[in-house]
Image 1 (cartoon, rainbow, N blue to C red):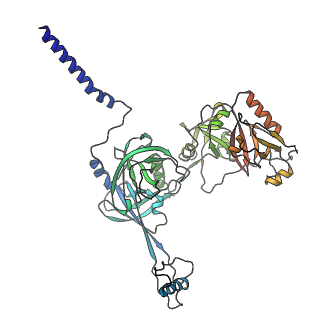
Image 2 (cartoon, rainbow, N blue to C red):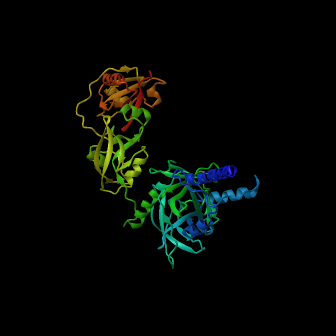
Image 3 (tube, rainbow, N blue to C red):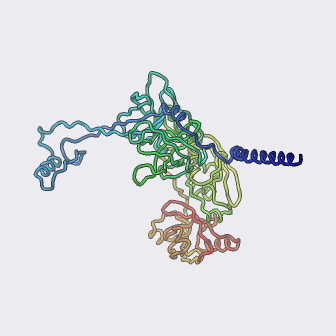
Amino acid sequence: MPCRLSTLVRRAAAAALAALLFAVPAIIASGPALARGAPDSFADLAARLLPSVVNISTTQILKTSSGGGDQDQPDMPQFPPGSPFEKFFHDFLEHGLPKGDQPDIEPRKATSLGSGFIIDPAGYIVTNNHVIADADQITVILHDNTNLKASVVGRDTKTDIALLKVKADHPLTAAAWGNSDAARVGDWVLAIGNPFGLGGSVTAGILSARQRDINSGPYDDFLQTDAPINRGNSGGPMFNMDGQVIGINTAIYSPSGGSIGIGFAIPSALAEEVVDELKNEADHTVHRGWLGVRIQAVTDEIAESLGLGKARGALVASVNDNGPAQAAGIVPGDVILSFNGKDVDDMRRLPRLVAETPVDKTVAVTLWRKRSQTNVEVKVGKLQESAQQASAQPDVTKRTPKSQPGLVKTLGLTLSGVTPDLKDKYSLGDDAKGVVVIDVAKNSTADDRGVRPGDVIMEAAQEEVRSPQDVSAKVDQAKKSGRKSILLLVERQGDLHFVALRLDRS
């Protein structure tokens, strides 16, 4: 009996252990840190989404000259060097035929292919602006090979988005927008488009990165994916596993022109707002908010000099006269930490936040000023596409007294007050004020940060300076306070920017 009981106990323990071991994957899989696994097949999802994706064919009429000269000409046929035909065709293409003998030359047509997706059953289609730029004719090819002529409803060059409209005899299958902000790096994505004009093609991959800046425009905030994207995929949708559009495939990085697993898509959080404005506004244009500031990145040195802790936010370098920021009391040297309740993690995020804010809306702005946090309210203005950044024109009636150059050894700078000779030498304005840099020591911290002769230092440690002695005093004060760097406001040919210089380098 004891042996039988012992055996039962061992079996029960083994069963419990096995149950625990088999339960572990289920417990882990239910945790929030892991995304859903890869599906056995994308076939069902692809079959549902393909009808909402279209191919776009564009035609551009190229004017061809029949009279020679510099205008568009056909290429000369290739003949062996020295062939009499070579000279004949060269003379023909260079000078043309005599008047009266010139044949009528038909205009040539250039065609290109791209992708798009239906966003409204009524026939509204989204694509990239560069897909249909300069096109004289646009043809949309549906998944069932139906060809429809398309017209341009509106376009936005800054985000490379265009909205087209076709007329169909039945409601079209439309895709739904998804939330790109909820997409996580590592999530599965599906790209559908028209690579190399082959027709509807499906590729899969993962979301590789977010908030990529590829220097294509002022509002770069691309999603990066390794889903194969090739020529002709531009304008096509990037879907999440719920079948929602979270991006517009726009560009690839490739030395060869083919996919190497680095593709970029405009996030739906940006695209959806642009498309809604193009569709609904009476003038079919995008109206963007305007703050009226010029900003720069907050480096580690700048953050330390301002007592900010870690580098974050957008540093205000200058403020436009009579702009929304000036009316709200924002001044150069302020660091914008949040705008309309959204954190400004880095400088690149602020232009997008401002642009997508409705015009005339009053929003809260959190600033870092004088080593502490403060809040202001700003009534957002309207961005004028042709508006130029205004430069400050201070009203100075007294000429700055002449002063002798002085050497600030800590910063590796030789400084002088503003003099008539220096105004002529460096083309400074009549109302120039501050301290002029007349020499920069090689390999100094100032040299590393790009300070050069002719720059005018207007502030040091966010205090106005008028003489080299003022700068020297601010440097000494910063050292005594235990700071590792000092912040200078520098003007160069009317352009203001902040420079943080290390104090522990001679």
